[in-house]
Length: 542
Image 1 (cartoon, rainbow, N blue to C red):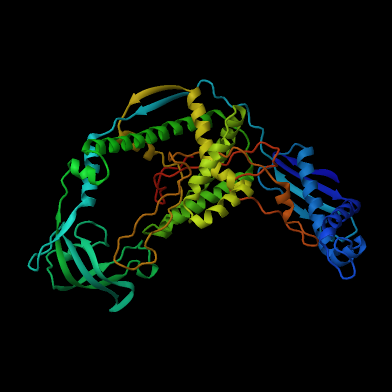
Image 2 (image 1 turned 90 degrees about the horizontal axis):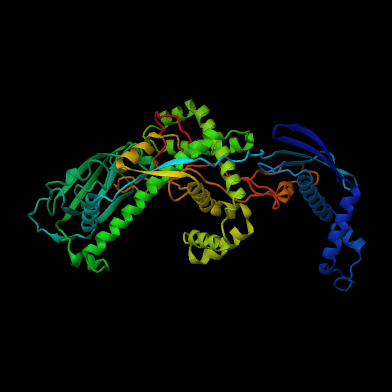
């Protein structure tokens, strides 16, 4: 294989490879030897079919496989010989006009990872806001638990329903006088004042009693999950079958025992510990953002445009998904369009911080152990049915990118914890409201997309639920860093087939590099958290 560099500008590189016909033919011979023991042909014993007959029978397939193997190995050799670390999957293309028996010319275009300057991690100074558990909130959580445990007692035929009562109804929903799919139900229990149904539905049940028939007039919200009902005026013909009153649960030791605990104090302690963990997560998120701000302010270097473009597209997709669930999607999308330049700057910052954090981790021996990786895989597998979990494990073990994505959040946390250990940290008492307000004011963190509405396929008069945010990391901060990555010249060359030149398919999301190359980080990303404004907001910062 001969290689000639045709482009060397900034991080961009291009090469022309010439793979001789002799090299390709040698690969064909190798394939023939590999396949010979498995070939069956009348008149020959198994494994004794002459090589020339095998070539004649399977020549085209053998030639294609040999060419593909030669391209893969040549690209890998190019990366190794030139010590190249691709930022994204290299584009590999076979020149037009290739014919079997002739030399093959291949062009390789790629962007390399930059040489990240030695990270400046000495002298970091951070403030940690300390928060105390709020007993008022513990009491509120107890009341919420009690509310969920309350029982209902039939109030009799003469009782008129009031706020806080439960009404059992049959209903038929109609739009323009025609019953719509999913709008009919029987024996549905509605707690008046719970806010669980569409606006106006529960309020019109105040004053009804057993045996009453009533028509409720409502308007579905503009962001209702069912497309055919968004913003539609509708009626619900209801028949009241029962009116029930709540029997409040007394908060005492017996209540705690019904939940499997020893006494009420133990229950309070658990709620207090839960709140403390939540507060610690908030303060960690706050300190982590301050850390990333310092790193961003003190490090500047060129980043691969292809990585920035990929991250920029991820941001836009997330925001456009969020905008589609706004009351006025078109206005929300117009705001996104207006701020596109700012989002590109966010993408560039994320990529730079991702590369920087990866460099810090590699330089200081931060790693995810095999035991930790096994634990991550076990946790991720829980979202699958038991019968599918083995397939999930196999997929992760065979797919380096999938493994890197699973590993990334833990690796991120370990790098950040390392930096915390190096920083001079001072504590300052604060309040939850202050921390949340400070985090809320930083609307630069483009968060994960809304996963949709739980009731998208139901037209019952339920209030649409907000979907959970897609969290990149458990502490709702912003960085996601992959610790190992490497590319793959074999994947890069995979799409190169004889007579069908085709660029290699770029890897999605994270960067790949050859196995022997330390992997670059993924771009720094936001985790779960506040919804990014599709309305007018401050410009986001990663």
